[in-house]
Every structure is written in structure tokens, then in C-alpha cells.
Image 1 (cartoon, helix red, strand yellow):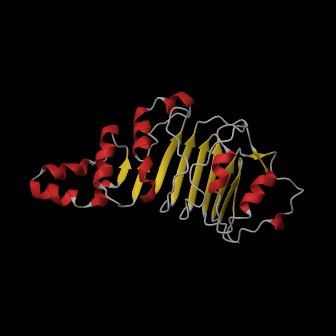
Image 2 (image 1 turned 180 degrees about the vertical axis):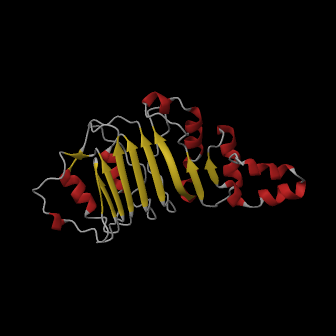
Image 3 (image 1 turned 30 degrees about the vertical axis):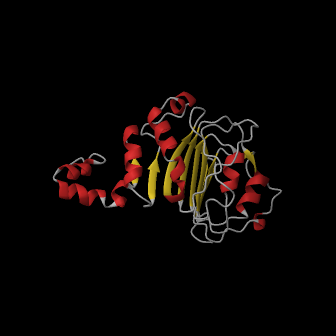
Length: 231
């Protein structure tokens, strides 16, 4: 049996009583994934302050700038949720030239953030997505496609437990020293995956004892995966 997303909404059409019950349960409307653009505002209005799960990345996405720029559904969702970051718990978002940008928002409940970026790398500096200290609950950060250090570095906080940063092509890798400096401030990391984002590999000039990640269990660097079974 294949159940389509939101097929449960049919229960609101059974009778008035069933509809009233559904409308009085905000959590039913708090999962905004694969939602038609014209439904987003309706669901946001019905979810109240329930913790939100949001996905603006459509299935089968191709990592090209034009795909992100002209995907109207993604644009509509990202624009609609802009003022709801205060109760978003999990989010998958796309950053492209034609999309509304997150700038200085606060997301106190955000636990997991998955970003697919098609912004240019180069030396351009971008304004932070969130206010300083605006993501105190963030435990998991996934960043893919293209890397903007000015956007990702403010999110590398001590409470992070999972960090995955993957690019399709290493056009602007970050130096070993910059990564070590950031990783020293994340002692709770349990899983770390960095692909095509470390410039020139890890330098022998940096002593491994200068970095302590006592909770690390899974480690993947560039194209050479390895696994740790203990601290």
C-alpha cells in the first residue's frame, strides 16, 4: 500500500466533527514537507506554535543554480516560513540567487538544519543566516553543494553533535588551520564528515593532540572514509 503525503487530510472531509477535531490538533499541520505552495500558509495558520518540520528541497533536485532560482514551490515555502523560525525544529532549505535570504532570524528550537546552497563561492562574504546566538538548540548541521564560509562558520557552535559538509567540486576549500580552529570549539561532535572542503588535506604541521573530540564515533574526510570505535 502506497500512502501519499497528506492523504490523511481526507479525514477532515468525513464530517464536521472529524474536521473540528483535526483542526484543533496543531501537530497534524506542523509537518510541511512536499506541500503545494498554495497550502503552506494554510498549514502555518493551523499549526499554531507547534514545533515545525520544514522541507523546501523538492525531491529529485539537480544542483544547478537555475534549478534553485526557478523552483517556485521552494521559493513560496521559504518565503512563507520566514516569520516562523521561532518554532521550527527541523529544516531543509535551499539557498539560491532567486530565493529569499535568511538574514538575522532567530531559531531557538532548531535542532537540525540541512542546507543545499547554489550561491557563488569565491571571496564574497554573505550576511549570517541567523542572529548571533540565535540557534542555541542546533545539534545537527548538514551543508552541501557549494560552501560559503561566512555563512557556515557562525553555525559551528559547541553544542553541535553531527556535522556534514560536502561540496560537489572543491573550488574554494577551507584551510586545515581554519577547520581545526572551528573543530576545537565543538567537543560534543559524534559524527564528522568533510568532503572536498579541506584545502590541501590535513597538514602534518598541526599536531593531532591539539584537537580533542572525545565523543567522536564516525569520521569521514574527503574521499577517504574511516571509522572510530572509541574516543
